[in-house]
Image 1: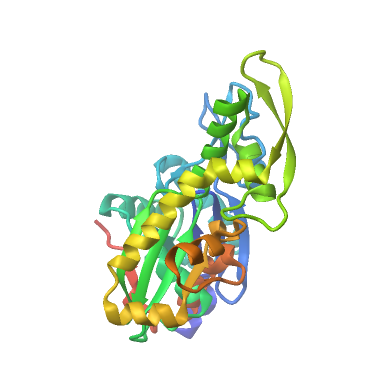
Image 2: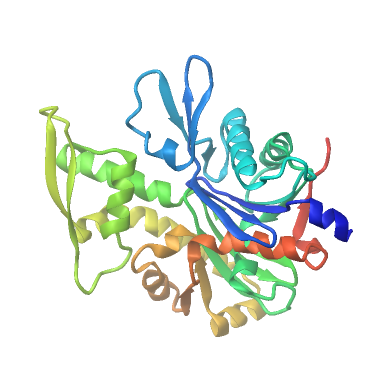
Length: 342
């Protein structure tokens, strides 16, 4: 087995709606790129993948489309997803003479069998030898360093671009989980809608994301922030500037944030009492890009009366988890779902 291990580049992929991260065994995280593909409409030819393609979002001429092949954490465009995964695998597996890689891919815990098959097939077609699927909350827990084989329960809230996953993990399994298709993208959409409705100002996805990152918050800030936003006036049709405060952005996102908080409440209600007392003692761990939203932990703390801790480097927890599993496949075999040829 040792010889084969030398020849094979095993990789872990956190296939996200917003970003895809790749971990190579013995090397760590080697790639972190937006999940965007730019294609030429007439020929279907891929022009750019990742950051270069994301920069084209909302700016492409008629003949070029910047596509995000994943929606709500699952593959929405099979062909483009396959091209994207193949591109990322090619970038990290440098040596052509090596064996095809074994791949561990994280997927939302709430996805259907059909959606799982789409992930498997696209990874196999992109050049994977064996594909293992790992539920995102489990990957996040392992990435944070939780001993997932222990009987004591841990609650993970993983807020990604397209999904938020709330799961209680114990004894190598997900005891109960709620997976909602609401995440960072919906927060961006809420900002776009708010400006359109209240100020007749039209902004694009990238601007909305920028506003969220720079002044967005889920809870009152000690010192509120402001930002000048540029967009198009829907009435006059000309470019227009607007000073936006963090209070307004919080108001814009409040309904979406409340949906996530409500899902956490539901998950807590479904948790067996023994595990609930473990969570009270250990607290809830917050991972994913949404964990970076200012005050998200405070908001959850206030609404659940439980300790909430943001994981270190929450954006990479899931991919670090796939990496830990790769390094110890035998130890983690119980948490993986192996690819079946159908």
